Length: 119
Image (cartoon, rainbow, N blue to C red):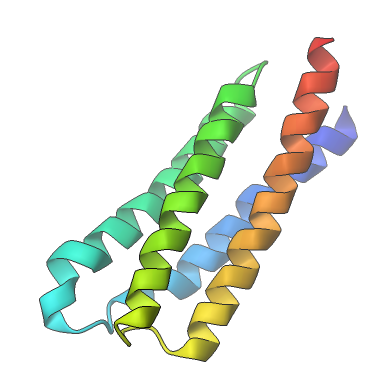
């Protein structure tokens, strides 16, 4: 069980580090995108951290982990759009994609561990 807690804490810690990079990055988007794309990206990213926190405080985190994965997928879509519109340079898009994938893999492992605990 200690291993599961390590995965949980690591996923949240990595996500908070990602937020420290993402929020100042989206502030640099053009003004015309700030009230649409930027707000949606920032809110989704913040929702991931809240969902991960909720998952840590429940005995059966599976639904929260699935919700966090869904939020990551939505975030990927919005970041892809920001990249296509040239609001997010290619190197930053790659960085964001790698970080989101890394946290996504951790959530997959966390979800598997939770399902094993149920059975």
